Amino acid sequence: MAGAVKKRGNRLERNDRLVRLALLVIAFSAVSVLVVITIFIVGQGTPIMFRYGFKSFLAGSDWYPSEKLFGLWPMIVGSLAVTAGALVIGVPLGLSCAIVLTEFSSKRVRGVIKPIVELLAGIPSVVYGFIGVVILVPFIRETFGGPGLSVLAASIILGIMILPTIISISVDSLQAVPPSYREGSIALGATRWQTVKMVLFPAARSGIIASIILGMGRAVGETMATIMVAGNAAEVPGSLLAPVRTLTSNVALEMSYATGEHREALFATGVVLFVIIMVLNTIANATSAKRRKQP
Image (cartoon, rainbow, N blue to C red; front, side, top):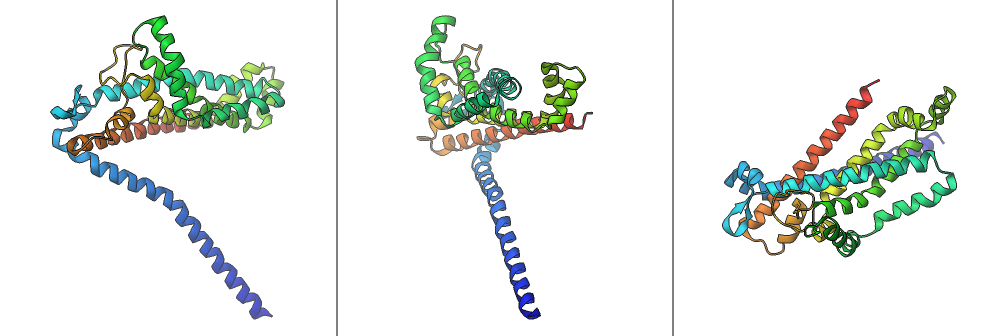
């Protein structure tokens, strides 16, 4: 009897080790895929950057691959301008909606509106782009002037596209705050808005910043909608009404026919985009960690 129990225990322990090993392999598979992608992009894109010089690539203002001019500065500025515009539009709207759904609406209303908001994330980006071309671009052209295809149009479309991410994660973060925080604040005489501003927001800060980071990543990496409404002019935009080309649009528009050094330059564009996203995420995470340490 004791031998059978011991044998069964050994078998269970062996199965447990196998399960742990399998889960470990699955966990590292995602990391390995990222490593492979990074190595491939860097390996394909960096040689031409060393050949022509990093300054020529990053600070050059002319993008004429047929003439061996590979200046990415207009696309870098375009990506940052469109992303900043999207955050200016999406963050206040998203956080305001999250506050209303969490603190100023009933559970029934929240149960109806929140799934509808999350459903926006499932709409293909080409649909957003089509709506922008049909409705938004003519409106901007007739109201403010210019071609309509512009930084402003791309910022508005991307600002709407990042709303589901910001709203959904912010709502979950605010709801995760212990009820005693709210009750204690209100018991001390604070209003609902003072409770939100002084208690709930600091308590849910890390989740809210995470939602903004994810929204920022969505805006930086968006391609199809940006191609349709941004104008795709490889020039530094002089205003919000000027056309612009982003780094992702640059790759998508030219990769199908690029060869030789042109193709390498597009991979270099991917390297620059990868670095920009890493820098932005690092800054956001560092800011979040610094604020969490503050009393």
